[in-house]
Image (cartoon, rainbow, N blue to C red; front, side, top):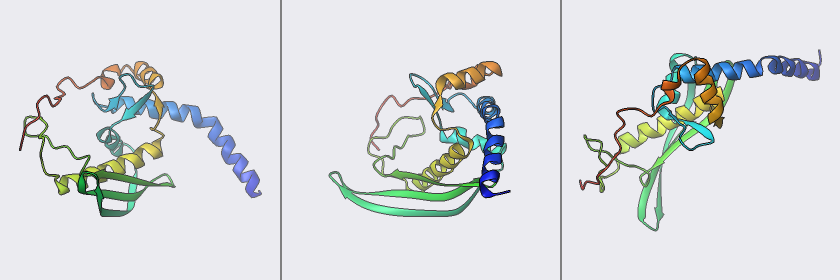
Length: 183
């Protein structure tokens, strides 16, 4: 067989199973979700949280390698700041993708023990590093499983088919910061 014939055979196989694989992944995405994992409200495309993406690691043999972490300092109109950037490769079934997660001290929000936003909290570098790494892993998971730019209607349909609509609800005990507190 020539390279072109091999490619055509691979495309034919992919076409045969593509829709059923995508539907199966959506059903898994709904079944393993917890309330709050998916953001659906007023969105044409559902967004999976990093914590929600991490749940897939229990069910899919995704591997991460070539992990790097860099701290970058920058100066802007607000003064000096810094950013943590994690980069890695994520692999599943012979497919490898490059992913990145980043968070800056400008983005960092810290909540107190009551879930209230602390207005003048200093950025916690350890927490920022962990958040950037989680974002990086989540991006890899979402890319490998095709969970980016999911139509909200498709996700809701999958939830109905597997009778798991409750998994797409807002968390009942979600604490939203109501008061800004000085640290």
